[in-house]
Image 1: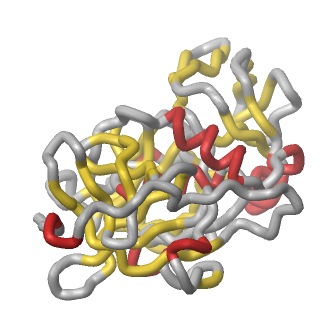
Image 2: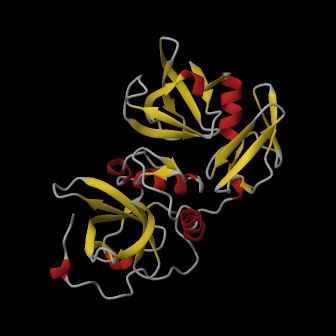
Length: 282
């Protein structure tokens, strides 16, 4: 088995071994992969270490590492807390994004291949992160106004499940790549009135398929990626977009993936729901 690490800021994962094929996800700097297959000199089929997502990546955009390095980087790393910051090497300058991984980071430096890099921005080690709603929402707000991009996972473009995945990743919580798979994580919240900040709200299309996900905030609000990462009203029917004066997403279920907290949680649904005769989806 061969292994690799993403050595660039953001790398597309494609559905097939072609630059013209659909981008279905992305790798961020420092994320690890298993190399499953090689196709010619240009393409690698990879499995992402974090979520087992499988797709094709251009060979020049992956750095092959040893099994020993893979194990080390998998267990010892920090996350960048900067929306955009550079890592500085003696030979190159690489911009990295929020949620990028810094392999074997010592608080200032790390080594990748034969080059030493320094990072002067804010970073956090997974062992120092508390899995709380406060932390989740703090990270989520950093993405506000990031544009929607199908398959994206960076502040320069991401989809709804990419958004929730990278936010919870920062807290050490693994979510699958697709909202239809994320909906099976954690436990169900039986009644909307029992929802807490940090819960995941899932939304369905007209045929009942889970197609969208957002993070519940206090005071009947949800943060999600729709056009851009934004905060909208949330009630028992779904997401209400005040700019469009309509519901854009129909609520299907709420799931709790955060561990229990001793801190008293704020109520979510405090405002009255919008009248049901105003429900209009898509």
